[in-house]
Image 1 (tube, one colour):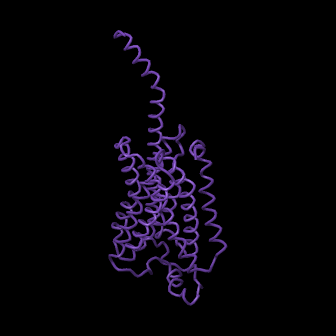
Image 2: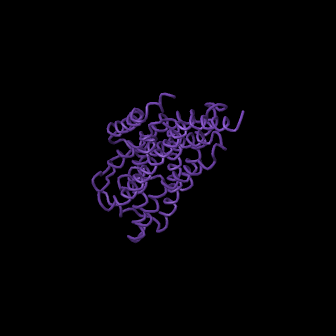
Image 3: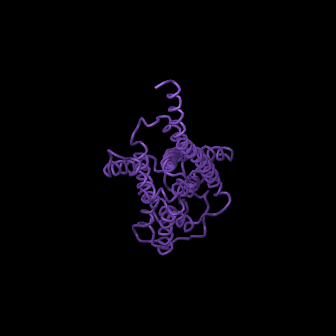
Length: 319
């Protein structure tokens, strides 16, 4: 075969591959734009959450209703979104056992992080303190209308450990977001809503975390400028985790098979742990508003399931 024939054959192969290559590049670009939008929205939502204690009064009941809804949403996202994608991303040579192992690793890791820093408390109202102190005596009468964040008594530096623990937890959330956008972006040609379930769960959960840090920092006497700086830094933690994983995974260029599936399974375990850490204290220590709290919890699960119908159909059809 002469040189002209080789050239013609190369051009034919290259042209035949061009549509697929362009499709993959377009998907990655769109997934990148989607991830940037998600990161920006989460950062803004988190920062706004940190300003809430100065703008509105979060009563005990309001806080518990929000926590129940977000907990249901996070559980639904873990089981309806992260785990099915994890099983798909592991591919050949892996099985359900690998998914379960990484799920357990994620759950235990987050539990140990919670034990170490004791950071996942969102309700600092006097009603909450009263219920936790008196639960052995079955006294569950709360004043749900009188709440002042400054009434919280804390050590001047105690907010630091909570801020650190929540920052690590938030970076893990960001890794989950980056992983699910990568996984879904590579599986669909319609990637405008990839990772929507994980995004909504994080978007609604981060303001609660920011409220925790802001409330304790304010009670500890941190200056207004200091509170704003801490709030801004925390708001950037989730985007940091998402972008680091996104670029880090792409730089590996397929050298770590199973990494995406393991990351999604790990994130599912972390989501389950965080959701239950919000739910279990409510179940044990409170007897008020059971119907409303149960309804909002189930509503959160229903929203997580419904989001599957908004995401590209091909993503869930393959599961």
